[in-house]
Image (cartoon, rainbow, N blue to C red; front, side, top):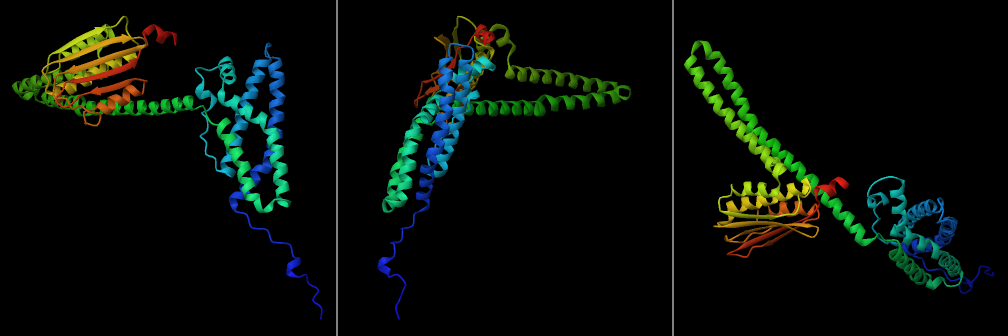
Length: 392
């Protein structure tokens, strides 16, 4: 009996199985051509007429709209590379996060100078030849170069990875600055919330409790007014004392929120006032050509105020000095004492909170406090005077 089945030596050699990662890379390479054609046609459709009409009213808006679309295509390509090639690139911040203001012309200028969009446009413009090559070569590899397909797919997609990383990432410096500002905004919000909680606690535990006791005392005095006038008079005297204490607590609380002397007379008078309450002699020297914006002035005041409180509580100093001056577009403050030194950001004296508060408005906070002293703390804030704030 003759066996009509083909012998093993005549059967085609089985293809080696490909891993999941290789199939993803092949899918990316095969998708290069349709995406390259779509992107190239899109860029050609707006870049050529937009550049030709740039001197007219139509050209610049057309370029801006085209760049905005290029940004969106770049986001799609980053997603494709992330899913199929494992390329992890941070997404750029939205264009509106880079704009100072609103309106058509603000958007137009921001879109025209958007580096993310221009790099994405370059990426879309140069991809067509590469997309054709990778598409054709990958298809041929299924029939001609199957044994080395995993290595060729890896080599080709490495070029794609380099293109994505080189042309589609966010603008590092600007994105880092935006992330820093977002973080600083969070610090400001947290600080404001903490300050509000402190004010609420001080009102509840201080003036409010005293006023409640005062109301109760006056109520009892009213009841005894006819029965026992002498006792009622004593109770009214006590209530009068409570009123004075409550008023003093409210004044202290208001001064802690924003002292009237700072609003009326500026940093020089306000810092002289706060230094007079320090337990050690303080020399104050303020040399400012004008007053900074109220927000900057307030931060400067409370920074120096808290530093002088630390001098009173922790330094064991005999003398302290406060110097405030302007250098260029920066407001500088320096608090010096001849105490025992050893001040640190993590020392539990509120230094870390001060550093965060200054950092949230693009300020600096530097401590030089060796053991044994002296301590020199320098704080720096952006200068913005009242006229500049009105212009903004």
